Each structure stands twice: as C-alpha cells, then as structure tokens.
Image 1: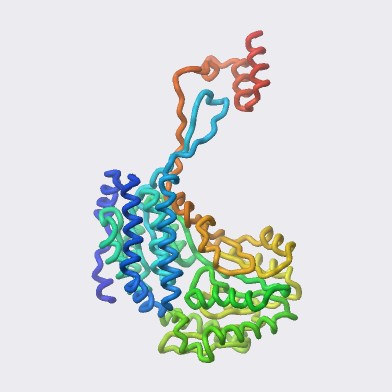
Image 2: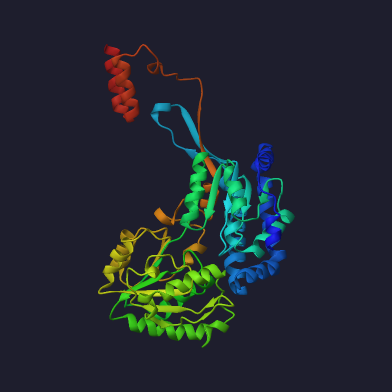
Length: 486
C-alpha cells in the first residue's frame, strides 16, 4: 500500500488546467449531468457495499452496522435528497424590489463556483469524502477529492470507484500524503472544504488565502454533555454510549468528549454506565466485535498519554484496558478529573470519557464557555428553563437536548462549527448553497427613466431621492410638490 501511494502522480498545474477546461465546457452546469452523477453514486453504493464495508473494516475494524448505516445509508440519503430537490434548488429565487428601482424585477441565481477541492478525514473516510461531493455535484462544480492517507484501504477504493462510476473528466480523486496535499494546495481553487483538525486547518487556510479562496472548515473540539438528575437515566446512558463508543469508538468529531454532572449524582450515573456498557460490549470489551479499533499506533500512543498522566491515572473508575498489538482500548470512564489535566484540555477523539463534577447543574455553562466553542454540545434534562438557558447560553456548532449526535442525520439542519470548531456548514440544501454563488440579477426596461439621478444636481432632486430611498410614498409626494413649486 505504501509504495502504491508513493507512486501516485502529484496533482500539478497541468492537471488543474485540464479540470478547468472540462468545467469550462459547461457540462457540469446541466441538470442532466448532475442527476446522472448522483444516480451513479447511489448505484455505486448498492453494487459495492460489501467492498466498502470491507475497506472500512481494514482501516478501523469498524463494525458492519456502523459502516452500513452511518457511512453508506447516510450517504445514500444525501444523494436521494439532492436528486429529489435539486431541480427546485437550481431555480432562481424571486426577490422583492423597492421604489428605488421601480419598475423592476429581481432574482437570485445559484451558479456553480467552479473547480472545488474536498480534503477528507480518516474517521468516517467514506461518508466524509463523498457527502460534501454530493453538494458540489448538485451545485454543478468540477471536483477534486483528497481522501485521508490514514485510511488507506478506503482511499484506494474511493479512487477506483469514483473513476469507475463517475465522470472522471470532472471528478477526480488524488491519493497520497503530505506532498500530494501540499501540491493540491498550491493550485487555485474556487472553494476548499476541509475536514480534520485545527492544526492542518490553519495550513489549508493560509494556502487558500494566497488565492482568496473561500473555505468551509469542519473541525472538532471538546463536545460536552451536561447530565441533570431529573431524567430517565437508563435512556440517557444508552444514548451517550451510542454517541460515544457506538460512533467509531469515540473517534468522531461530534462524539461526547466529557460529561458534566453534579457531585451528588455522579455515582449513580457511573453505576448506570458500568451496567449498560457490560450489556453492550460484554465483560471483556477488548474481544467485542462491536467496537472499532484505534486508527493507528500514533493515536494509540496519544490516548495512552492522556490516560497515563499522573493526575489522571488514578481517576479511572471503569475500563482502561489496552491491547497495543491490536490497537484496542476499552470504553474508559474517569471520575472527577482535574480541570488542568491534558484530557480536559485536548480533544480526546477516542474511547475515554472523563466526568467533571460541579455543585449545581447551572455551573456547567461556565465550564463550557470557559473553553473554545465545540462542534456540538448536549444536555439531558426535563427542566424547561434549563433547556432555554442551554440554547441561549452555549455557543456551539449544534445543540442536542436529551440525545447525542443524532442532529447529524437531519438534512434540514446545517452541520458545521463555530470559532475553533470550524466555519461554514453543509448537509441537505446547505451543501448545495456551500458550493454555489448566489448571483444577484435585476431586470429593468427603458420606461420610467428617473431624471433625478442625473446632473445637474439640485436640492429638489436630493429631496426626492431621499424620499425614494426611505420608501415613503408621502415623502415622495411632498418632495414632488416641493420641487414643482421651486
């Protein structure tokens, strides 16, 4: 695999020119081309699902259910939603006009940005590679996809499947690692969508700035879960488990990163976690087939460092077992971790879940707002006022009350971050909009030519123009009367 990646041709200026030449033909702008590509993507998933599942298992030991539902089925839904609504999305939107341009009509026309670059992540390497491309295709762009080299089996499969099923003159996959990504970033793009971490995001943004290229940044952060005491504890515990360990064993940007709960409720919550985790993953979770492995040895070492810190290692109340050879770490819960520990100051992105204690649930908001803005934040409560305060007080990419991660499945909601967790959003029509330019168009005839626009300027013309811009009929009448008297 390594030699195969190393032998991949670097994307160069000539490659970029070829792609722009294909876009310049105008074929990606047609409804028929967009529809054909999206239907081909659905066909690809229907025909190649076993191979996709196998590649995801090779890269992450991802359970078949997670691969089939959270990667393939969700992508199919995105394609079908775009197919169903794309013609409507493409239609110009009527816009109101004012007295200033009377008589006139106006519309907003969605046009493709041009040639766009999608740089994907390794944790959901199939979904996060192709889901943005659904929006880019629907909007009529030519596309280059750079999948993550950290998921090499999926990267190689994506390159083969895209070439086999999609229009290779307008949609290309570039495999490789840092040199290939650097070569891509040297080119001018009409938009870049990057999914990954903040460190690389800054490199991508710096490269984009040289060409004034707009970006969408899907990053991450420490996604908190506030757990109140007046809840259905079993349901809450299960939903947190599903969002944490049931999402690629915590290797997901919207997975719960830490819990905040009250000191007098913590033990009850911990006991519920222990019971449900054993039911889901057995007495020896290292042998469970329903947990993904850690992606590679570097990430395994990073997570081990978080666990082995002196002020943290004694806080483990459940789990903590590791299998270095097979890159597995069991679901691990840590109670009353210090706020200044590494695990409370770095995005965990793995199967470790610290529990931070507060005296009263309202104190949770100060804990969350003292850090950077997360990609998602979660609250479990039945209190109406607490829900309202959560929505009003916590700034995050998305909020979910009494569940975790499920907002990702709603195409009517934008998915994106704020502050350090990202910028821009996609999913559903938001994907179409992310890769479209909203072109303002105003239509006028030759009648009713307003002489007040033209020199010589007079006080009367000034008064009439002010009234027109104020939109006041009475003001216009007064200005006209005043001008006529003059």
